[in-house]
Image (cartoon, rainbow, N blue to C red; front, side, top):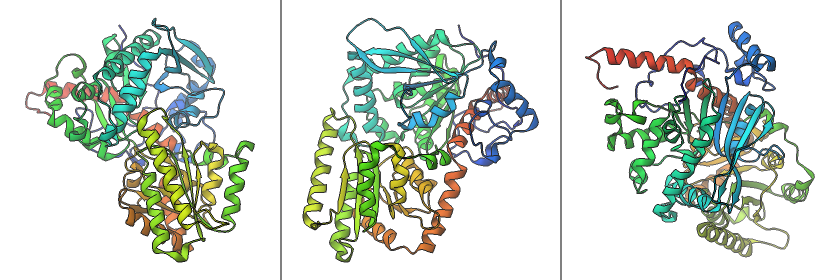
Length: 551
């Protein structure tokens, strides 16, 4: 049996017990004012630490102890991250999760566990392979082709992804997929369990691993376990389109902390829990997983502004950059950077651009839309259809409005080196981020951070993006309203510099304040052992008072 006797690895300067430790919390976003005065020790060696995170004297002593490799030689305290895929130590971090956690884990005495990205024909369970990544150990296993298909291509990306993005028509509700999904989560839990030390805290990431804590607890784990959902959580009526929805959502009850991107996601879970009776079962202190009362909060993820600004294009990007530079010298640019996914709203964005050229002929040959659409999940029929539709729209617009020396849409159906993106953002007068549904969408924040403050571009952002609630000084548009998007394009292209500057200042205030470090710190402080003590105290008081009812 694993136990949860975890000595504090965080500074105990914040003693206020949160109001949400007894039951599912009210929908709220953790703000800067909620932070304790000192910072989690895991971040002690991160370069360029903002002044607002300077620790108190007591916290500094703790951080120095934690960051000293010799001090950890006999210690078991670690942060254990669990995700579907791990960072590749031999490649620059590219995916959102790798960027969000790579730097932190490289400088943390921890363990990062997940699938290797490799499949095998063998039916037997593979052994765990480990390698070093800075001060962290990467641990990963292979999956059989059958299990991978059902777990990853099946339930994760053909059920959860479309349903959670409210694209039900793309969902394949094959019951065999859920069986493989549960099997893989159980397999991963059985492999991680023996690797855990009694003082570890565990942070699980994303929709591939919703039942992971439930499976881990079945193997005897009593550690503090947190979960963060990087994609939207839809309303209850949408969730219930998944036949196994009840079993799936009960899996979240085994976590101590569940983090969502948006307050709406928290409210959707609260509403689901109330309608399905999960709250009553929690208050009845049922057996198994329902002995826990998870805290559900919104933690909107941010970006590392300074790291983004420091990126330098590689030689591999020069051809694309030269094309875009040449165009930027002759016309105003608009830019969209996305994976070619049906959640991103790219066809509607293109239709709105066509409407712009139809209704404003004076803008023809004066504006170009640069659309980068990185291919993804190309073997899935819905994505192949989207690729064909997008290419057809691009060709139609270019054929209808183009000239000998002007293509209205510069379309790059390929992955572009992330190091080149800041320069592309800066060259563009308008950033176009119009997803139908998105957990957060960090491209919106990257576009803002990359701008020249003296002559910034304007962000057109759909309300389908999780970042819309933070970036209200962008031009917000309904994600499915082509005409409204086209009108926002015109407004952005014609906005005078002083208005662009004023909006940019306000947007940067949020991007810099609620940044990537802020996200990691607020989440890990909420998951910290000091919170466990506060929760235990609150629960003990509630149990001792016969007059106290459910929260």
